Amino acid sequence: MSVNQNNVTAYGAKPTGLLSVFNPPIISNRAPTVGDKAPLGTVWINSATQAAWVLTQIAANVAAWGDITGGGGAFMNLSVVPGGIGINLPAPGAGQLAATGNISTTVGDITATAGAVTAGTTVTAGTGINSVTGNIIAEAGDLQAIGDILAINESATANGSVITTQKTRGGLTTIVHAGDSLGQIVFAGADGTQFVDGAVIATAVVGTPGVGRVGTTLTFATHADAATGVAATSRMTLDQTGVLNIAAPDAPQLYSLELLGAGGLLMGSGNLVNTAGSISAGGALIGGTVYSGGDLGGVAASTSITNVTNTTQGAGTLSIKSTDGNSGNNAGFIKVYIGTVTAYVPYFTNIAP
Image (cartoon, rainbow, N blue to C red; front, top):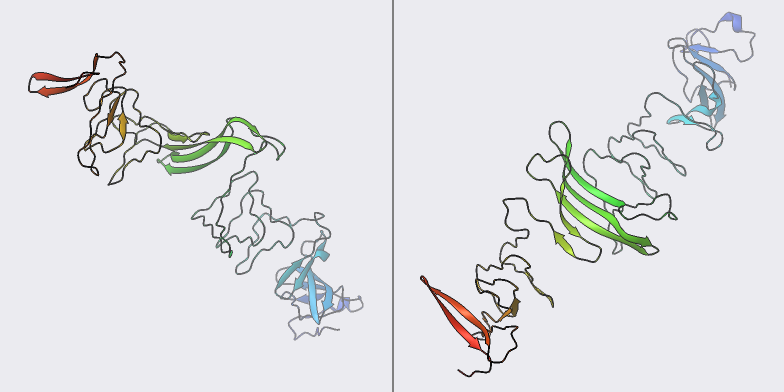
């Protein structure tokens, strides 16, 4: 196929000195298109930009022009194809696309069908990064979102979305150690000069890890409304045995645990134990058995009080039990304060009233 090269076409004038050259170059003031068909090997030069191309292929009546601007390189791997520029690298890993700028797509996608999209520094998406079947992995750096991170599971199953953090010291065959962090969720805020950890949810390994066995603790931390540094303070820990430990609150707080509203504290088969302080009730103590090694409402040295108030069986029974096993001795008493006078109602064993 020949190209019309007279002086009135867009190709411009062909130098007369090149008439005897096989496939002489086409000198034009524009770039070639897929419709510009010439003998294979023809060179096209844009006189306005000094860019150059070579015709590498004509298939299905479509011309493929390879960019050879600047010379050098394997320009045969570049071709102008319908809808864009085709890049054909020889074998996987045998070539690379090097650039000091960016690879930009305005409305389309950058797709890796079988391989991977790898970035040495940062991948920035104007709208979204979509992975249909594979993973988005940040092996050495961070996966950052200046916005929201949303996990949606649309499968027709009972499964929901899962966010997993995994820790290894070098592959599945390298076991984790006690004290290793298995991951953290950190909520940080700027204080004007730096980010301060406002709250942290963290988990760490405890005990002796082994096959099917990784003991852990789960810790919740918050930052006080005071200048105490960047790190948050541990407030509550759920240990490897299931015990929940709540740290002492910052002064001048009184309570480590507050149950607000009409809710209550339900005990199963265990006991409510106070080892050092006292148990104070703003209302009634209802049903069951209350044990106290110290003072219970001002009554000293009582071991148990049963049915202080019973709202379902009429009048309740007040029982005072003593560890004194000597028959006839004082088993306990009720201490009553009347003004400045203190009265005692004694109880004796094996003595009828």
